[in-house]
Amino acid sequence: MSDARITSELRKFVINRAHGCCEYCLSQSQFATQSFSVEHIRPVSKDGLSTEDNLALSCQGCNNHKYNKTENYDPVTIQKVPLFHPRQQKWSDHFVWNDDYSLIIGITPTGRATVETFHLNREGIVNLRKALYQTGQHPPF
Image (cartoon, rainbow, N blue to C red; front, side):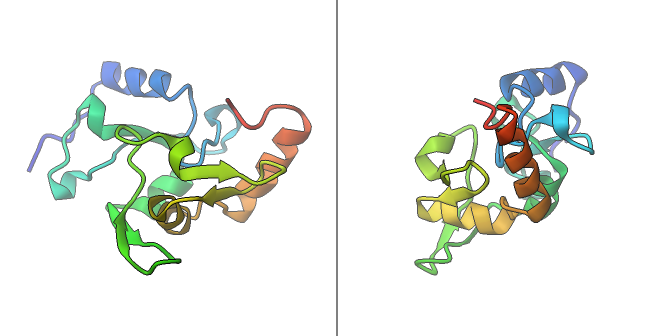
């Protein structure tokens, strides 16, 4: 098994690279009630390494739903597909916002599988997005 330790320098790098946002649902850490995690995209349990290209900033909701998953079924095609990989893929190639920026819509098999697997439109986060949108603080980019 690989060494899963993440140094404080590497942790800071990942947080800065993500601009303090979950790299899956784009929630902003400044509005979170729980600390974000620096997580292994390819889990340690599947021989993932603690390297810059295998780490992502994740809110607790996404991190908990992801667990050690790297693939799941696209709800449209029912084909098993890889989940979104923020180091290898661009968010906007797989997801779009609805008109009021409250819901993330998967536009590819990977995007749809990731929305479903990570529950990217959890009720609490949708409500937060709506409130932040009203004040001009969402979406983050």
